[in-house]
Length: 324
Image (cartoon, rainbow, N blue to C red):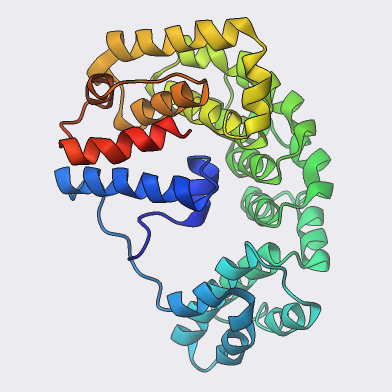
């Protein structure tokens, strides 16, 4: 059975990193889907899913499928390579072969090639993207930032930080996204300033969550307490990501204000705001409570999730949050 969401979505959006966590999350997705198929439509299958499952073993076969004469197959094979290189290192030989498609006349092929080279950590290619951050074309800068983020290219962080500015409004969304993907704590000073200036608040919150430092929690609290709907949702997503690593949870347990005051705030908002909170926000609030060591009974789950789940569905849902 195919997963409802990609590994990237589970790791970076929900902060779930082991198979048991993902499996329990799938139970929740299944329960939601049975309630309303429009809420969670079935995931589309990848035509090269079998190759992706093989990982590095399938790289030679996929490379052999790349041809400028058979674009449909080449698109699928190139995209499959991108999936594999997220978790497996690309060899120099493979990178050299893929690079031959970068100057293709077909825009889709050249775009997919650039994505694979970035994810595959092609050093010369990423260095070229770094130089493009100085271009006057906002679109070119945004594209370069996106590729640097895909490659998690740490040398680009100082330049990316300098581009977080209202003067670069178009590029800033991709620049902030890249800083979050790279995950360098050096970017937090810039993100904190932008957040305090109400610039790209949602983007900044998610990036701070991805970087995952406990020191960011006080910075995101104002958005949890009084933020707009989308800001509060992003703030809780960020908090859930920060609390995902066990080391961070251990640190939080030593901060009385967080271990007692924060759960009280979350429970209070769940009770007071109720239906005004989206399903996404409620989910992440419960995830935060679980990661703060809080336990909830089935009645609280039903109330806080705002869903009429069946008894057998609640078992999986409770188990999921209890292990967070």
